Amino acid sequence: MNHSFENTLEFASNCDKNDKLAAFKDQFILPVNQHNLPQIYFCGNSLGLQPKTAKEAINVELEDWGKWGVEGHFHGRKPWFHYHKFLTEFAAEVVGAKPIEVVVMNQLTVNLHLLLVSFYRPSKERYKIIMEAGAFPSDMYAIESQVKHHGFSYNDAVIEIEPREGEFTLRTEDILEVIEQNKNEVAVVFFSGVQYYTGQYFNIPEITKKAHEVGAIAGFDLAHAAGNIQLQLHDWDVDFAAWCTYKYLNSGPGNVSGIYINEKHCTNPETPRFAGWWGYQENKRFLMQKGYLPENGAAGWQLSNAPVFGMAVHLASLEIFNKAGIQNLRAKSLVLTDYLEFILNEAKKTNANLSFEIITPSSERGAQLSLLTDNKGKALFDHLTNSNIIADWREPNVIRIAPAPLYNSFEDVYHLGQAFNHFQG
Ligand SMILES: *Cc1c(COP(=O)(O)O)cnc(C)c1O
Image 1 (tube, helix red, strand yellow):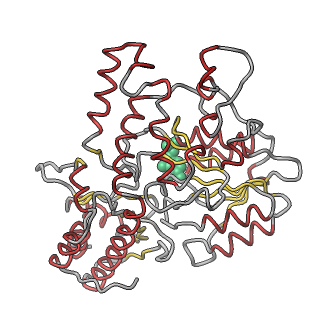
Image 2 (image 1 turned 90 degrees about the horizontal axis):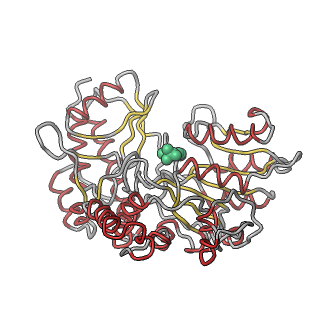
Image 3 (image 1 turned 90 degrees about the vertical axis):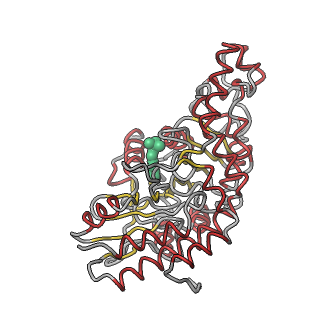
């Protein structure tokens, strides 16, 4: 961190005046408290805010359904027959992929299973999966059930990498070493992009390179990375990835997921997969013939026809990302999160009631900072909530705070610091 920050309202408001992305805040609906005051929202890592364009996007589809009935598949303003295509380019832009490598479909955990069907192809010798310890529960259960499905035991087939004694996050060198140690047995290296609990941004290109060096597949769950950091999945040669769209991507609770499959795999019709009619070659889909012929690219992994209402909201959100530019968002995010770190450290200096440690590595992070607290942690979290600030609490003892560059301001961060100053312990 190399800024001359100040802990004053004037400084924060000047930063906002100079922020070219500041106006995007107006495109979102801010939740309000019981006195109808807008809350300061730092929870975009869990559920992003609603774009004001979301309602209209759903309305368009409701109207077309009303007007056209089944004919909406071909005559709607955005024909449902190939609705996913309206999203592909924007989604590819967000994750640094070629459009052929991306499709939006299903939900995240479903997609992880589908991708593991394609890319976890264990043999007697090469069957292990290497992942971070303490992964998001859904990922742990997905991996556990996959290895059992193939007849392996969890303890034998899954290698979880733990931080070193006294440390909270993983060192890249240790990850690479575990891959090396298991070079003849590892089938898939599967990591999150940004760790949900610690906020650590893993070194995706290094992990991918090492996995390939030993003959393994590299896959990533980008739930906390998509829309947060600047990904370059294609250039990094990642094999597969999936993400949800309701966190930094602001597309609404439980909404659809995106997948990425590297060009070399997704354009090969022989790449194994579970199939459904919507992934069938589009020009022959309605011939209803026997024998699966996949659409070229990631689109050939689709199973069902698209859930258009959810997709419409995701599209509305992706249009905002396209206007703001992921590169600009990341540039702002880096400074905003550095400012958050500065403000939190200032509060710790002034208020002796505060005891927490920021465990998110300063050189490897997205928007989120994770504060490891002590037995007063829950009280601190409740104090923030009572101060009109929405952060989130993760058992056993972490407060996560994530300033989202699309709708959080430097003033938001300043006010958060004031709330920390007033904590009485
Ligand atoms: C949020 C999150 C999920 C959620 O999965 P859903 O299938 O969308 O419910 C899964 N994995 C990770 C790493 C997450 O952060």
